[in-house]
Image 1 (tube, rainbow, N blue to C red):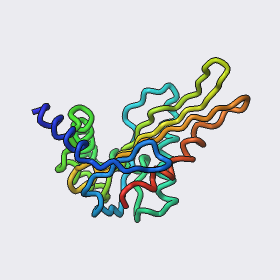
Image 2 (tube, rainbow, N blue to C red):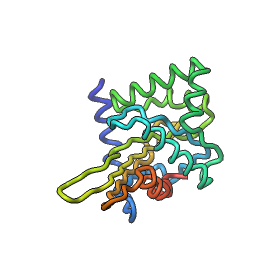
Image 3 (tube, one colour):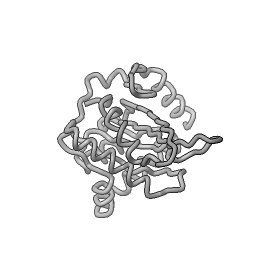
Image 4 (spheres, helix red, strand yellow):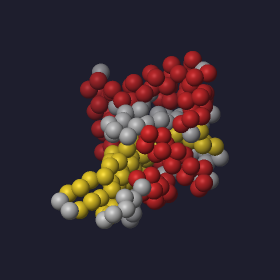
Length: 198
């Protein structure tokens, strides 16, 4: 059964059309996303965090939600703080979210029934998942650099399908003054959002 879900997940990615995009390192749009126009979106909290600076997770979530609101691409944006608040007051939402994320993370399977249920409870049409790939300062020889990399994935609530995925990273060299990592992220989050289905 796990092999079947894994194979299905791999096939979805093979069917995806890679979109050439100047400004982003990587962007994929599913063929059915051409007719997909979500009006309300929920930004899910970053669940897996491999970096030492845990406060950066909240910063990234706020940057993304803030950019979505500022661009006015959606009628409603449920940010991570609002989502977590709703999970605390609704046992049904908490259970559905935990089951959905467990299947997604362990099997790579987005359960359509759970997706619909969460969507109805949150009153959204799309989920946006975030991952921080890089968030650090490096020193190589006499070169100092700041590195930030993010991945975004959008799922259609009605079908549970992954409709869009994008990844971008930037490295900025510096001599004395360290560039702020949130500032680097903010610089390209808007570019990433421009490529999402809407």
